[in-house]
Structures are given as C-alpha cells and as structure tokens.
Amino acid sequence: MDTVNRATPEGTRHFVDRQPTDRAANFRPTADGLWVSSLGMGTYLGEPDDAADQAYEAAFQTAFKLGCNHFDCAINYRFQRSERSLGRWLRRAMDAGALRRDQVVIATKGGFVPYDGEQPAEPRRWVAERFLDNGLVNPHEFAARYQHCFSPAFLEQMIAWSRANLGVECIDIYYLHNPETQSIAISHDTFRARMLDALETLELAVENGHIASYGAATWTAFRVLTSDPAYLSLTELVGMAVEVAGQRHHFRYVQLPYNLFMTEAFAFENQQLNEEFASAIQVANDLGLTVMTSAPLMQGRLAHPVMPQLSDILTGLETDAQRALQFVRSSPGVTSAIVGMKSREHVTENLALTSVPPVDGEVIRAMYSAGRGDR
Figure 1 (tube, one colour):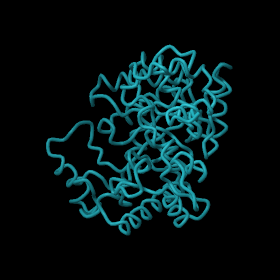
Figure 2 (cartoon, one colour; figure 1 turned 180 degrees about the vertical axis):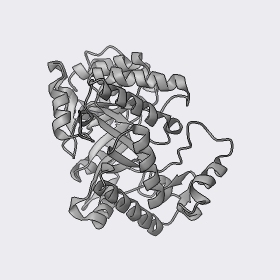
Figure 3 (spheres, helix red, strand yellow; figure 1 turned 120 degrees about the horizontal axis):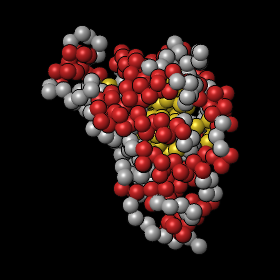
Figure 4 (cartoon, one colour; figure 1 turned 120 degrees about the vertical axis):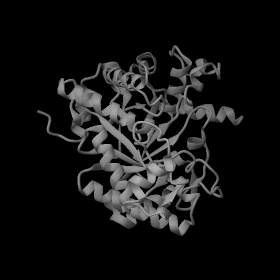
C-alpha cells in the first residue's frame, strides 16, 4: 500500500525512469528536487457540469499515460469542480495501482472565492454566510468586491477545502492566486502586511504537512511596468518570505503567462535584482525559484495558424499548437508549461511533444533577436 502522501524526488524520478527513452528530455527538476514534465495539464476552462468533469477525468488518464505528471488547479476553477475531478481520477488510478502518489505533482491555488459546484443565485449572500456571518473573515480583509482574500483564516479554509477536493493529505505546490488583486486595492504598506500574514500561514501549513511548498501564480504582476499598480517585485516577495521564515523558507515557485503573443515574462526587463534589471523568468531563476508558465496556447487562439514562419524554425512538428507549445517549453528558464486540455484529442495532440526534444535555447533567443532586427 502506498503510504507516501506527496510527490517526492525519488518517486518522480521513478516515473521518469519508467518512460520510453524518447521522452528523456521531457522532464526537468524543480527547486524541491521533483521531476516534472515540461508540459503540465491545466484545468481552468470548461463548463461547471458533469460532462466537463468526465472529460477532464478521461483527459487526466490519457495525459499521465503520455508522460505528464504535473497537474495544475485552483479551488475556484469551475467552482471547485476541477479539483474534485482531479481528485476522483487520482484516487481511482491509485486504487487500481496505475500510479503512486509520490510520482505526480499536484498544484492548486487559493485567494479567489470558489463557490461550490455552481454560481450561486446570490453571490454576496453566499460569501457572507460562509465567511462573514461566522466571523471567520472581516469584511475589510476582502478585495475585488468580496471576491478575493488572503487572510490567514481564509487561506486555512481554502487549503482544507482543496485537500478534501483533491483527496490528498499534502498539496505539492500551493500558489497564492493573483496577489496583484490585493495590491491594486490597498496601500503598499497594507499589502506588505497582508502578504507577510499569508506567507506565515503557508509556512505553518508546510510545518503541519498540509502543503509541501508554495509560490505566487499571477496574471499581470510580473509583466507590467514598475509604475503599474498591479506590478509586484519578485525580489520583494522572496524577501518577505525570508523575513517570515529565514533562508529556509518554502517560497519556491512562480507561475505567470507566457506565449508567442505574451512574451513579457522572457523579454521585458522589469524585475530588479541588486543593481540590475532583468526579465521575470531570469530573476526568478536567479532567486532560486522554479518557473511554471500558463496560457501557452492563449486559451486555444495559438492552436491556429498565426505565424507561418514558425514551421521553418520549430521543425519536425505537425500542428500550430505543437509549435506554440514547443516555443514556450524550450524558452530558457521555463520548467513546465501548463496547457489547458479537457479532451483526449487535445491531450494526444499536445503531448506528442513529450517524445520530441525541446529546441536549443539559443533558437528561442535568436527569434527575439530577429524580432528586434538584430543581425
């Protein structure tokens, strides 16, 4: 009986060693020493209904068979149904002996109000009944019209709900979901205070064995101008983790969007480390953080012909979706590109890449140089 309750370096390495030899280049180590597939499976898209649940569960099984061991959720995705679908598949696969818990990396996020299975008729009343009327959260701790919260009690509740949804004792990666939602609504001093409380809560969750490591999953925070209200400094965030827990803190992951159209994470030098500015991906790597990227297909828009010249650069691939994914996962500093896939057909098409080596990072850098007109 499998008694390990989280992903481990040994377990994920065992998964890698079981793969066909042509998938050897598909896996990369994280800051925790876990081995993850260069393409992860996201669960954002889809209707909150039984049909989408079943499609996801079938897609998880296909993805795992094709060499994907990185699964990404958020408690609010499809009103908690994405987490629950992943949890059902995981339990069935483990019970059948098809996988071990220590082989798969489970990530989820907390911060947004999740609702429960469907959109409530009165969202504000739903929030009040579960968080305000019982005194769990103070009204002033919410942002975005009672849709976002990082208070310790709220995060503790979200972690507990996610663990139950996923059916796991320990969540491998727990992200603070879009912290910029807080930063744009309050003063920087108040934001710092809230983040310090949130990070202390996550460190306690690590100590209690409820999560293994944590990070920040963002949309705009790391790819806008420093003057933008949504801008966040990676150096400052890691510094806050050090302030809370010292150098042995568990802030180890960053997730941000990056694709052929949204290239800021790699190309925009807006993050400061010491006296120099560099891109978010570069600074994250320099700080010892693992970079996971989201939206590699821009919610399907890059699965269609948009850059015909790509076929001359990223060769040996059959579809535009594969070329778009190859661009992201081959970019230096990216550990895993999380792509939303809720059908077996899309999983099969996208994960055909697991048997194709990424291109050399210099090929990607040359694409940027060509775009700037450098010769």
